[in-house]
Amino acid sequence: MFSRINEDISSIIERDPAARSRWEVLTCYPGLHAIVMHRWANACWRRGFRWLGRFISHIARGLTGIEIHPGATIGRRVFIDHGFGVVIGETAEVGDDCTIYQGVTLGGTSLFKGRKRHPTLARGAIIGAGAKVLGSFTVGEGAKVGSNAVVVKEVPAGATAVGNPARIIEKDATHARDEATARMFAAYGLTPNGDDPLSKALHGLIDNAASQELQLVRIVAALKAAGIAVESVPELDKFNPDKLNKLVE
Image (cartoon, rainbow, N blue to C red; front, top):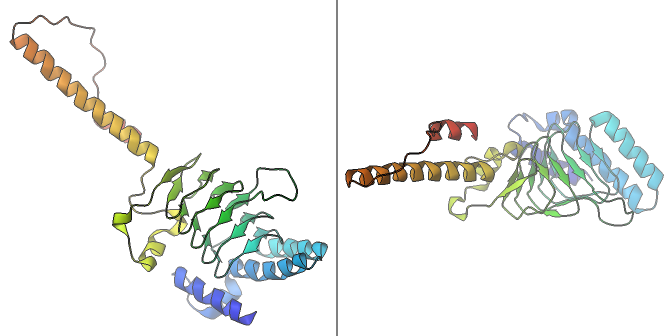
């Protein structure tokens, strides 16, 4: 037990620049306290002492503000940062080295008992503050879920999910970074240049429309220069691509 706690403390110091000492982490980090108490509750749950497991979980929620069902599976070196308002359901599985921020829900969408109802986080997944991951699918290894995203379908390994409902930004293999640097910049599930794919699509459509309008102006000018009559149409509001691009930023 003590070796696992020591491992947890080391992983928190590695991932949290605010951690100043091992003693501070041991005494002042509710995420660590919740994980340790969950191990006690889960041990009771697996041995058939269901009420005792739920009671330990209930006490842990009161002390830390983090609710982890005793039936949930939590891997090694899982870091719940800040943690207040985190809810992890009964059939959820959290892999090794995952990071979960405050306000996260790993929830279920089914009422059937005995079935897997909650998500699985593969190794190294990062779930940003306020994100809701709902359903019995998998968030892939090294994937990130942006803050306040609502995820209701599988997230591929290495991808980022943002928005409500969440949209997937696939990992760009040409921009691989050092793991420590990636963790630093992926705080709260945010990554540099991680544009919303819907926003990128809208920018592309606006730019394409602006290009087509310019082409039409040139075609009409060429026809008039050649002496070909061009029927005029009622003038509409002037198309302003810069203004539209700012609206979808």
